[in-house]
Image 1 (cartoon, rainbow, N blue to C red):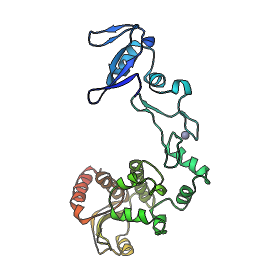
Image 2: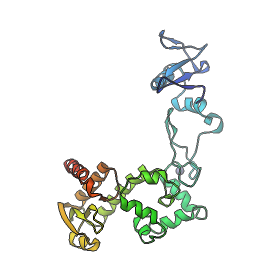
Image 3: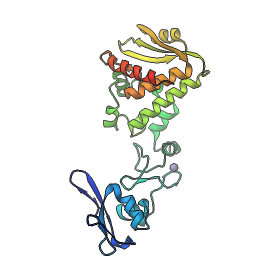
Image 4: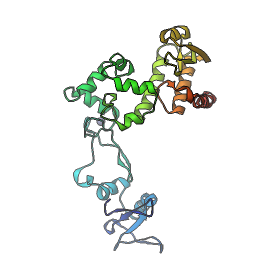
Length: 282
Ligand SMILES: [Zn+2]
């Protein structure tokens, strides 16, 4: 905590507007901000008071009083040198960092490219990305990625990756939420780009060899079922490629997971997600 910011009560944040930036006095009896003494204001009102009584923007205020950036210069992306985006005086500048570095980056692209560009420092990452960077590659090397495969097959939430950054380093990014959302939308585009948007496709549910409940999308249900040796399957929706892909993504967002298997005891949750998603399908 610094001397321009304090927490009052349980969670009210107050900021101090110092006298040297006050251009005109303000006094309502309850809030007093003057050129002699400055004044404290509630966190939600800081922007308003700054623009009314000073010449500083919230970003300039943050640089001067809530960080050292006024002296040091604003934080920049370690790869492209661009200034990081200013979020708010509460949150400061936004940056992507990664599992394996203390540097900040303006975007995930810069963070990834930086690691690509330094193959000696990020061997594991490069190996992972170059060989497909996905589940298939880890499955082809079950000894090396045993923990990851167990994790995915157990369908037990992203918490484990988050809590074991060392163990799950090959997955690449510290923020599992971002990774999950990216997975969902990548999977959707991948499927759509594999054919014509109007192809007849299927959204299905199935029982896997391992007795897990699975949902998924395919353009050829017979081949798909044979390939994974489903114990049984059922088509829930026959529609265009785009629509089934959209449906699958909506369900995943609803279930808050990027994989397609569930324990049978969670089928109720799936049905809820399915019903809600199909209503939202345009
Ligand atoms: Zn950058």
